[in-house]
Image 1 (tube, rainbow, N blue to C red):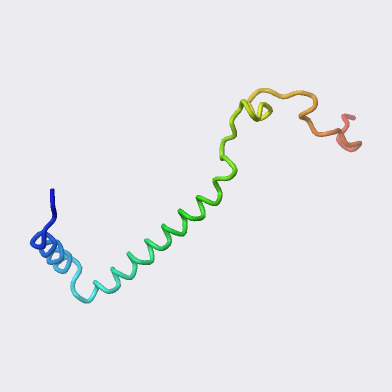
Image 2 (cartoon, one colour; image 1 turned 90 degrees about the horizontal axis):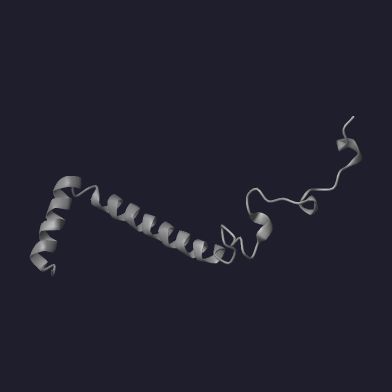
Length: 83
């Protein structure tokens, strides 16, 4: 399915009729800003992928829900002791 010049002209004509000639520069500007923000987000997301959001329970056994041992608990402080 190829898009030829006639189809492109029809799409441009419909856009001009819908938004008006005066609004097109603002529309194009907002689309450009949106695409640059999207690309920026993709780059930042790729940088953050060095640490997985959900660690593998086989490599991080203490992160499993419902499993805790005495070693996992913080040490008791004197002011935390029951009275």
